[in-house]
Image (cartoon, rainbow, N blue to C red; front, side):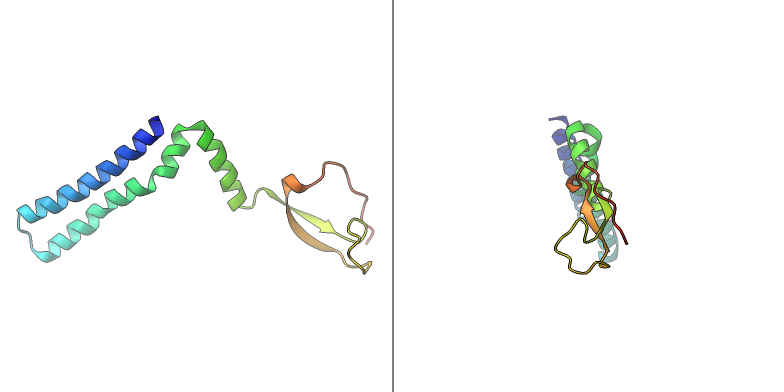
Length: 119
């Protein structure tokens, strides 16, 4: 509940800052160029509020932290291993000299050792 409260507070603060700056500019009758710049820069607060979800959940929730670490490891390909595939452990290959590298998930690898590949 704490993480949702922080996320909603950041979103509301971003929108309030953006809206308050627009209303202030309209009340002060600023020129169009200044209004454009104020609106552009006040949108930064709204964008920070919208993009903070990932970081707030990572900071507050240990459950989200665990899942986000797994997601980041998958995206950065740290959960993958390079293995050699040859005819000795893959009977679908027909040529004896056909050995290639392949990326597979580490969780898909067997814990039992495979016979050595003769090149």
